[in-house]
Length: 268
Image 1: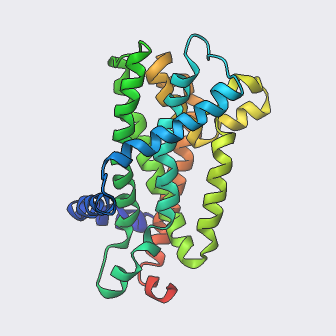
Image 2 (image 1 turned 180 degrees about the vertical axis):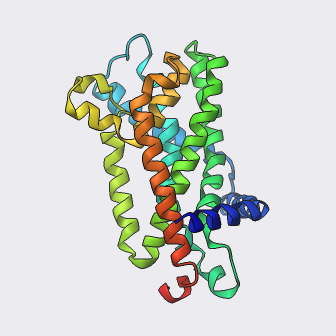
């Protein structure tokens, strides 16, 4: 098990330049496919956020969360979802998408999940710019508490890579894996307190189960940096579950990647 972890870490560290180059190429390729280029990196999340706000904030008349306007509160969670969701869904397809490269040359396959996450990181930064502008119009400005976003961003990256190491291999073994991931992510959007406040379900078993959701930990962490300023230890229960699951996924994903590293061509 530790041999596989060492293998994945070493391969990623030795190919840092290649990871950056592939991610940069994918970003530029997407821009070349449209005349408006980077405009869509800003337009797509804005359209989706406005859609959710219209449905949940206007049609269903969701009230402000405490003293925080609903649109601002919702955006504080959606900025995480718009990053972690495509990292997971595209990370699942990371290896299969590059089968043409894998079959033609010796390629460090374990770096592919990281290239997907790095590519989506650009979109995340674009949405963060939009978030800062919207927050400023509502009286919420960057502060020293926002430095905590560095920690939660690293958490999101590590979790996404750890999960994608496993799912990208499983997707090579069974193509149904990606369909299952896509269906699960649609469900998780509504089961995670992104569009609704967790206080609505009280303090019982359901609430405790929700706090075990690793995406909840990331969403609540971002919102804490933006609004609540409670600190990392205020979410110790969720933190323990998050890091326990993330470490387990990374070990298991590394094992899967190491075990099948010479068999990907046979699985095509």
